[in-house]
Amino acid sequence: MICQECNERPATLHFTKVVNGEKTEVHLCEHCAQDKGDKFMFDSSPGFSVNNLLAGLLNISPAFKQAKTSEIPQQEILQCEKCKMTFQRFINVGRFGCSHCYETFESHLDPILKRVHSGNVEHHGKVPERMGGAIHLKKKILQLRTDLKTSIENEEFEKAAEIRDEIRSLEKEVKKEGGDAE
Image 1 (cartoon, rainbow, N blue to C red):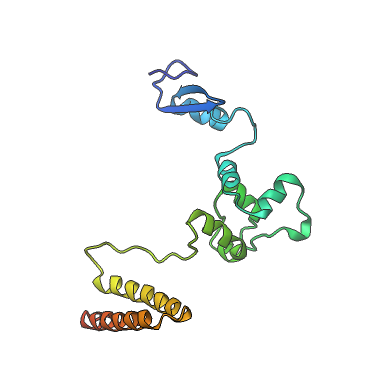
Image 2: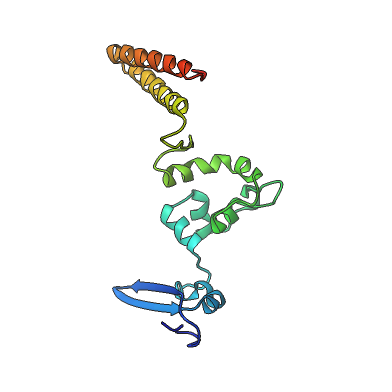
């Protein structure tokens, strides 16, 4: 298929746009796609980007809503000390300027992470199934300890005793494998 813009090179990027039930397909070569940018996808609104679309769909923060409707007063602007990235710019760009931004914008990140990660705000990582037997056991123990606290708070003492016993047996297995049961 030939590029619809230059009619010279083969089309490598294919965009399909559906607006009000009308389907429009655009086929471009890489060169023309770089020259035209997002205009083929979002030609109806000139300063629009995919990051703005995602931020709007996720309803990322009250700061995003406020920035859309009115100017933010100078004293409310949150800015990273090292790279000078503002929170509003982070919302528009979709990524931080430096590692210090995580600390600077920490108070605003929890709602975003909860929305994006189905309510989770902590990352515990993954371990391949075939490896890390002790690591899997430790993760299971941590989960069981959380369940134990919940059972005690709900006054389900029989269930709590069963969970306690399971934790003890798993801790013994961890010690056998040479790990520290924490």
